[in-house]
Length: 624
Ligand SMILES: [Zn+2]
Image (cartoon, rainbow, N blue to C red; front, side):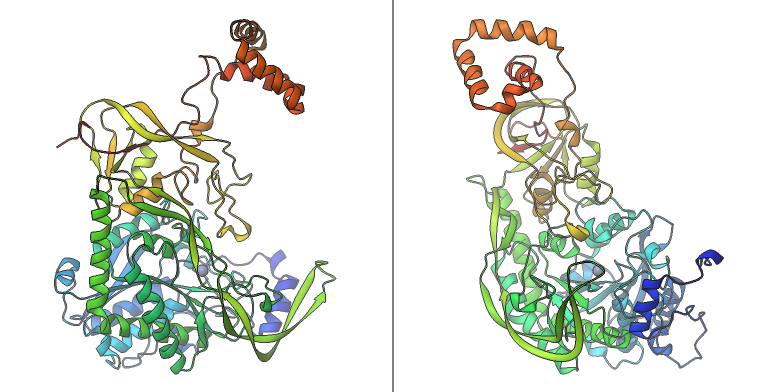
């Protein structure tokens, strides 16, 4: 539905006018969907000379046209519904009409999953995918891309956001004339939702993921950030590199191939650029962990290589779509060329994960948090000449770019180091009453067991102290990490969680998550409180940090006197504290709480993480 602008708003805001003048692209209503004459296989974006991108209905119609023209090689499938009820669609391309994932896995054919328009203002990959699919199965110019590989394309992942159309949705971006919106209909950013899985779109993605279990994943975007010459940038180092062969393949085979192949097609490509200082590229390029709230971080936990494609926002739409096209073409070429190796590495990663879950001695160490180790390499950065001036608008330094190319050598960070890892248990046990947590575990398709009856036993767990929450909601949650400007990559920890051994009771129907399964690292990142996107960090367990009983001061008064009279050591501790801690001395509440905390009335479950780490499943009464 197009909402017409009310008359009092018809004058475009000033900022928009100047940006549009700068970009020399006047906004116009997207062309209405015209039926292409038979034989005209131009995509809607091509037919508009890259001025527009097709709406949802026109996009699906073009995909249906491809499937109708090549029914033995192309098929549309629905994999879920959005919040507003739109069908989520994939197109599957397979050279011989085998569309069954299990049969494809058996025959050693790599499955490549391309996800487009998760941020629906960034739809370059969608228009590139339409053209590429046409060239593979209709014009057959690129038919060889299906020699071994099978292509599964999510055309428009954020379909509701895609239909929230405006010329004013992407202030930094140079076309097309109108685009969709970043978030889905409940204003959730799907690219922060992979682990917590709140959105119906994410739930659908997880079902799709488990149905196809792809061998290689690509997520297509458009950048924000600095201006530079590169039109096509990519990311490969996304999370813990626990499988050296996969890491080595991404670094030594995939990345050089993408640069060579996409570069040879006339595009300026390099690895994703995150400047330390957007006004001064000479300070260098930094790297950070993609925690699993992001697609790439999540796919890493699923033991599969993930590739991020980010075209540059200020390049014209034709350049960005054709760059995306060449990038996806190059991905498919290497998936065909390295098919056997890719499948073998993925299988080995799964087998290693299962084996780690079976070990009964000291638990395998799993990295949870990473940061740059500071190592840099010189990088020939192709930027634009810029100048710095004092802004009379912001009062800060402002950068003004020219279009004069420069090349300078800057330090580029190259390595992440593990800053926190944990020894994994055999299994986790989640009490039956934590239904929202169990629901998320189920959504990820993890293999779960249930307890047949109530069970009490010693488990390892955590007691968390000093938890603090970010003052503003983030993605609809009261989170324990600092989401940072733009809600991106801050990894602050949810307080200190000290490991403890504790006898705990688990009711019948509690859920046991064994770690001898291929997606065990997903469970570890959900259930280890200190992981960057743990359910604790996202606030799913906030209630355990709430104090529920309070002592009246006159009751504590008597208790305090009794405790001091009966315990000389406590008396000494109290008096020392009064002397040494002025805040304590000055706070009646803190002084009374000193006694409450040391009394048997204090709630022993306050801050106690209810999920247990099991060293063994022996003795746990599981449903057969
Ligand atoms: Zn994006």
